[in-house]
Image (cartoon, rainbow, N blue to C red; front, side, top):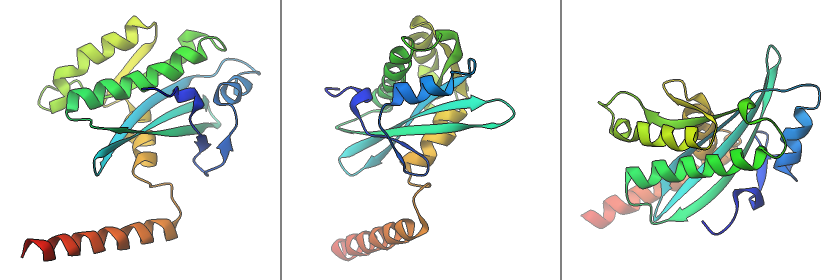
Amino acid sequence: MSDSILDKQWMTLNKVQVEDILQSITDLNVDGPRPVHIGTDAQKHGKFMDFVTAAVVLDPGKGGRVFYCKTRIPHVNSLQHKLFTEVGLSLEIACALCDHIEADQIQVHVDANTNLKWDSGKYHQQLAGMVVGHGFKAVLKPDAWCASHVADHAVNGKNDSPSVRRNRKKTDAKKSKSKRRGKK
């Protein structure tokens, strides 16, 4: 990954651009330490894999703030590669935050299941080991809501406006229709 995740364009769920993600998270901790949850999810789009890394700063009893950024990577050929890239992106922002807040405030959510009946289950110990080895608490499915819900929400465009979603559905329907015609 040539570009740092810190150099990416970070946004809120309302699509407001964030100038400096580290400063924004630090500012939310001025009145006292708040839990910071970080997770990444990915979605395949053609020959590329779009990764969304989410950072959620909770204010217990009052809600929280969500920030996210997108990273597009070509040629992610396996589930293992996808999962390790997700954790790597999450750890990059988590490590950068350690210069601004305490590491014990940060939890890294891993989009892997502890149940071995799921394909991701065979990697959960390695992925959790990466997180713990960096000094953070690892949160795995089914408790990894930051990766499996917040980041998933953004990577699948669920925070897009209704008109953007309608246009995407129309485009997808046209692509699907043209593919079916080509197969005849």
